[in-house]
Amino acid sequence: MLKSILTQNLSNKNIEDICKLKDTHWKFGIDSQLNYFKKNINSNDIHNCYFLNNKLIGYTLLKIQSSSVKKKNIFFLHFDTLIVDKNFRRKKIGKKLMLFNNKKIQESKYASLLICDENMKNFYIKNSWKIANDTYKTINIYKKGFKLMIFNEKSLIK
Image 1 (tube, rainbow, N blue to C red):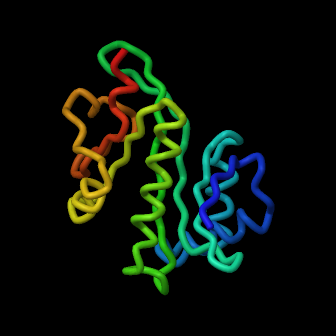
Image 2 (cartoon, one colour):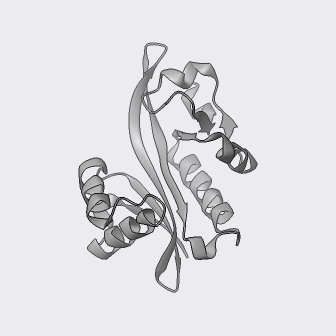
């Protein structure tokens, strides 16, 4: 089951499950994950969760952010995290989660941006994202050496 939950509606168990899943990939420890969550996640951030028999097996974080592009302030969804439980990889869970994310992004009427390693670029391209042009490299999430990807760009063009 795919479910979209705002931070303000997450239970303590949801938060703990998210942090445990994230710690399987980014091994900083559960306490560190929980501290990061408390300090960096806002009440209106969107958590797209994939549950199987009430177990969290896939997760994405979409953070509402703003930045300046060509001296214009824009709002966008920062696609911050995508993780699938290692026991469920290669079962098209990532694809299903991406389709769900894309739908939620389109419904939000925002564009979404993410940064990724070169080796993940094709995964996002296969899921209807594209490489962002250099104009967007002024956005506050961009890091040199990473690919900046964009989805629903038309919502930025008004």
